[in-house]
Image (cartoon, rainbow, N blue to C red; front, side):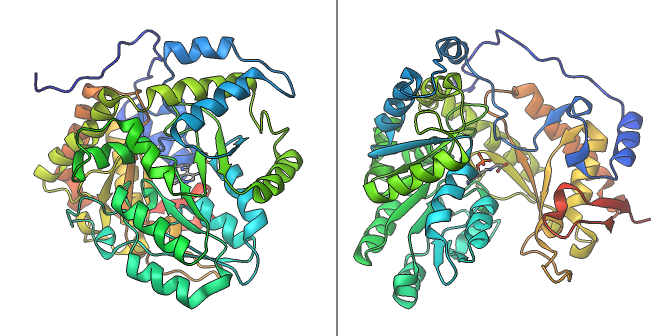
Length: 455
Ligand code: F0G
């Protein structure tokens, strides 16, 4: 059979409240056109993030009942630890309440003024935690990764020449080399096993620890299996193990590729660094056998890790995004290609070329998509990155709109509905107008700023 179906049946459902276009127009006005401020009950399909929004399986809910809530020595921790170590064989597994908490602990130790951190592309919380310590974060993704139309199979790869010269130039000021798989900020694009191994080798040659941000490790492994020579006959678990084999540690958000609604971890091999991290963990998150989590969360993660590496699930997951990308592409809507692992990205600057970047074409697409279909997406462009600390503003590198797919949550007909909404937008796109920001905070304005549509 050719059709790839959702490889699960639905046992429990959450009703969606349907709304009309005129209701949505009112809601948009009430939230000053900022989609972060919408009530989720007023959203029909919520593609704001793939983080913590997935559906847990019957086995995960059953595991939750088996959670042990002891403060210390909980068997839930042991199950969590062995599930992590089965895929990522690090010596020290330190649970945290989410990915950014793992980053905060790691960078509270490593990121000091004068220090420098390379990555393919730092996710915004990673960059935030590095910069909060007074250190600098640099993105060294390959050039193909910055071109939305380039069909390179591994657009998340690190530029190895740049990494080599970076490490030579910055020497001892680099506490570790980071690599994000998949590269979320670069469109959910994968990193090849060859590139991961090469980064590990370069880091080692320079005596630098190599830390992987592994949030979407299973999606990355699936792309390796499909696209990298010699990987086709291997299991996803084996590929995952190879991805982490040469690393010295990882940060992780279990809200992505562990099918959990909350959780994360920091994993390390260096015992001294792990001791420092655990001391910090006790201060900020909790005792090392629960981190910031309930025992039941640790059990949900342990079970989730056995399910996320199932190939039928990954085939359906990746195909959903490809399906949407192919159809939008056929309609002439500029999309980031190839499709990413966790999201579809629309190139709003190219699509609404009549709206200048400082009038936020991404915001215009996101607001219109909500008005048309009740679909919530996220602008990743000049609204998010265009304001500088001194209050000035300039266009971001790109104006994208991200449709992030929650895991196991929506079906084929939801995908068709999204495509249909874009079809309607395509017909009126010349009439779409830009926005003006009328009120904004100094930092991270996209979460709370107020917009006004330009007439
Ligand atoms: N690293 C990457 C690559 C991420 O995508 C995220 C979160 C984090 C770290 C932080 O993890 O949310 O558990 O603290 N990304 C979400 C998103 C929020 O929507 O892309 P967290």
